[in-house]
Image 1 (cartoon, rainbow, N blue to C red):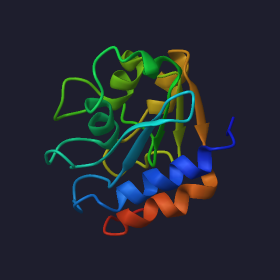
Image 2 (image 1 turned 180 degrees about the vertical axis):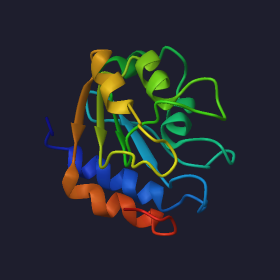
Image 3 (image 1 turned 30 degrees about the vertical axis):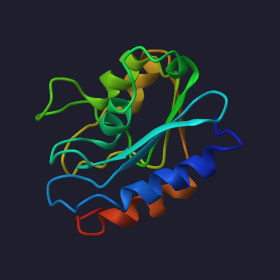
Image 4 (image 1 turned 120 degrees about the vertical axis):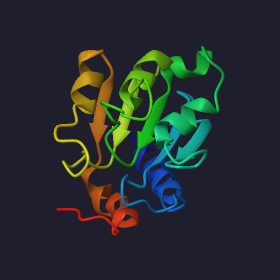
Length: 151
């Protein structure tokens, strides 16, 4: 269920997505991690650190392993977190679950352009995380991806 500050933080994630170097082989995605008290903890975007890094991975990588603030935190991602990776041993869904984050807010679900059937939201929910979608942000989140054939 969307919360009162979700639009503010998703707008920040969209701003980060615009910083992504465009790629013909990957989406431009932004992610923001926010503590339960509303303090922003980290942000990241696709290809920020290397050509294969995903936004959620980038943001989580800026925080220490086992950071106690993650237990009640929310991660805002402009796209559904990946459920499979070719370039890394763990998907963003697995990284989020392992981090201790309990809530994930997305703007749109991953279309089948690169992954036939992304299961990110389903896997997060199966692990007991709350997943909320902000469909009002879908077009804003898709905009940095206009270089891709989106349906």
